[in-house]
Image (tube, rainbow, N blue to C red; front, top):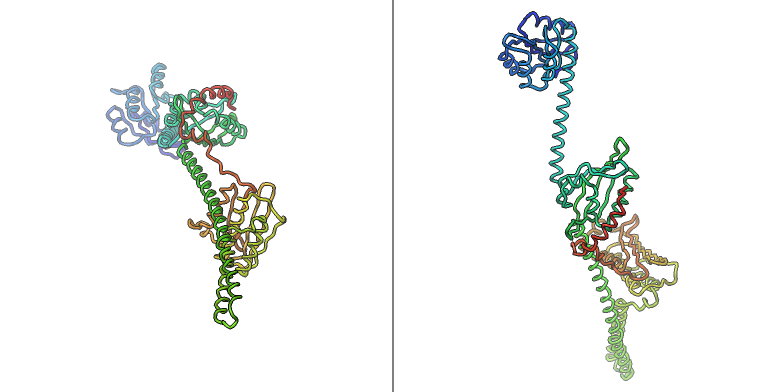
Length: 530
């Protein structure tokens, strides 16, 4: 469609049987500053051929022609195009005919004795036609956008919605996608007509959190996000849903939330199974450690009492045998002394094994046990190992004390194997609830890939043992080496079980029937949504 600039050439289809009148029309447009190109036709056949040959900016038609007329020309044009302007330029036309033409789709009419009105009529008709074309293009673009939106939404797993507050801040759904049926077992129009059916689907125990999150989002004019459970009317089916939306402030200060509600039941069920498995693993790990420590204690006692006693008896017998040998039997005495040395070595090994299995020093407290183990490490590795503690003793449950000691041993073992350090610093701290052990070496520092190794059982064992007792253990690289940090409660804490109600709901148990009556009362108390 041509613009209104005077330099633009106007391609005009002129329905006129008089060449003189055609020239008058052309001169009127030229005087107004336009550059018209006129093609004159005077019959239905020639007009049809001209319309098919090219696009025209405007059609100007006489009202009465021999064998043809303005109304017929208008009808022919409208069959070809809805947007090309049509102006009647006639020497004589009655008011009724003019009104009938305008109702049929003509844009204006001009009397031939008043052609000064022709250029303004042409300009106005072109402007209106251009506006109609732009409006039509916008409508087409909107329809295409809506079609794309509906295609995308129809393939999304969940319900797309637009919820906005109205008068008195009462919310209402202005858009709900067809995903409403699959998620809520409701047709979309039902939720658009009555927002209450949405709140009726919320589980009674989760309705307060929904209302609180919505009120907060409304008060702050922020995005509204919520996670909770819904029930399907007439059944025991319960679903976990995730609501995510963006806030948009409307011109009248109302809030509009646009977003999606997704079914996350499968993820929640998987999460429950993971937490249950982790809890079972923690309990199993704790049980294994308890059994290991009990067995170590038993073996240590057996070694000390039985093997240690036997070796002591052998040594006594060797002493007696040495006294009975004559001094001149030098070879016999030499063998006797060699055997005695072997017995001493066996007794030392026995003592060391028994101590490692169950250090008796633990009976003197965790601080003394840590200091003793540090001293042993220092002697064995020829490496400085200092212990800092503000307390002479930290009273701990025996299970916690053993766990702290074993994790400290594991940390020292890792340092000896991998760190290439020359110095180890140990700190023990405690408050009313927890005990904290920190071991820091000045070695090479543990690499990130070593921390992530699936077979790093030493680190995994420390972490799992701490977790099973309600604490935490971590290993990290520092600027000067590697640091191990252990935090444990001063008394063991049981690993929590999965909430039985949540488990029952996630497994869609029959207990939902008992909640229906309670929901009705709670829902009536929450009618004022915001």
